[in-house]
Image 1 (spheres, rainbow, N blue to C red):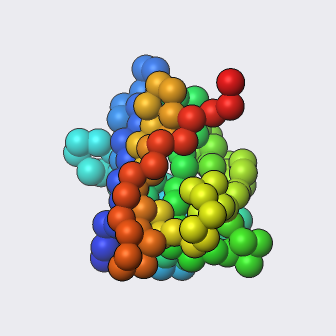
Image 2 (image 1 turned 90 degrees about the horizontal axis):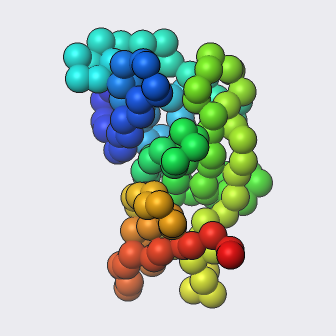
Length: 140
């Protein structure tokens, strides 16, 4: 079971019950799932790569789960897009460095994510000096 709950995201596919997705923060090797709102456990989704220090998770309009992490992985990534629609043991679709997208200030600790119809909204910390919210719109 969970010891911590650094993030939770609820997703419901057409004709299916709602599912709550979550994980621990450190050394995440699987995404945990529970029926929502009953919280009955469902099988976890194993990851092919460990994600360190998960900070937030949110579904986009296409049903893909996006997870942000505090630490960059060995490839320099701290943002992950996962396809959790099936029982695939390889849900990773894309990985990139969100810190780079947030501007020339360098590393920023991504905290939470929200998708709107037109953009990704991210809350972040730049150590103790700056806290903020950034809206990232896709290119036209």
